[in-house]
Image (cartoon, rainbow, N blue to C red; front, side):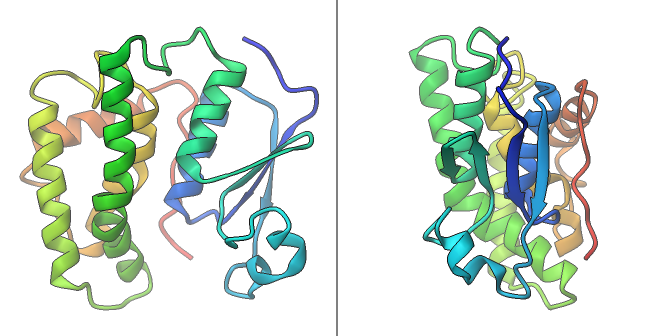
Length: 205
């Protein structure tokens, strides 16, 4: 396993599950890093200095020397490929690669408008749109069925897809989305929390 020449810089919002998935991998791989908290409520992400890093004005952003990357799932793939290319975090064959891409797509298509949005509404003390809960339960039913076949989303071992899904799924109850009907999902969350290097996602402003 290689190491960066200088500590990696992660521009983040601590409460963000997108940032947390990157924080998880940085911690698990024991990569030297520093956090740069971005004041999103204050509009820092819309200022020229930050837009020079990510023109979309979104966190997370990772700086690795002169290399700047945005989009959390892309950062996960970069970190594992660059610093742990022989580890179990990356797909071993075409089937696993396809499955990982499927779950990455679902993290945008269902995780974000479902559990992630419900959690945000709950943290902000706002009523949750029933559509968010409906999307969440459809997604959790899919995850529950997937976990009947294996202990993790893609393989017998954890992969980047699991890190991508952990934070918002674990904190779905903050948005009023119960996990009571999904025992396999709850056991999967516990397996991720037992990984060496696990760090929790904050749940309060």
